[in-house]
Image (tube, rainbow, N blue to C red; front, side, top):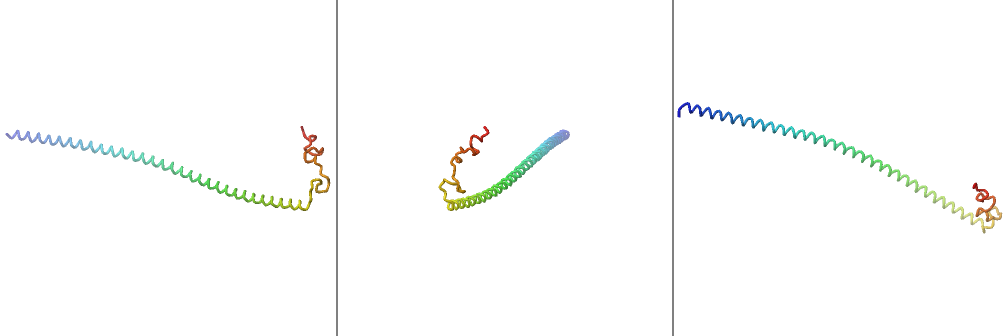
Length: 147
């Protein structure tokens, strides 16, 4: 082998090494750009997901606030119902006591006033036509109707 052939072989090997280095560098840069693009895409997805999560959090907070308000309204209505129920019970008790007192007075009056149905409390005879509305002075009498 002569010297020139060796030089050409060395030059060819050097060119091949340079070409391989250039191809490897280009592939490395493409791979790096692809990785950067992928990282950028993931970052954008993360931002979109974070924004969506924040919106959902805001909606959840709003729903929670409405639920607390509804619960407070329900508690207020329950307290109002309890107060009204207690008031109704008191009124019922008072009415029952008044009825008992009335009944007691009626019983005492009947015990003190013998009534056979023929005379009123003033001692005058009772007219049965007052009971059925046929007495001429009774407002239920047909003569007094506006028809």
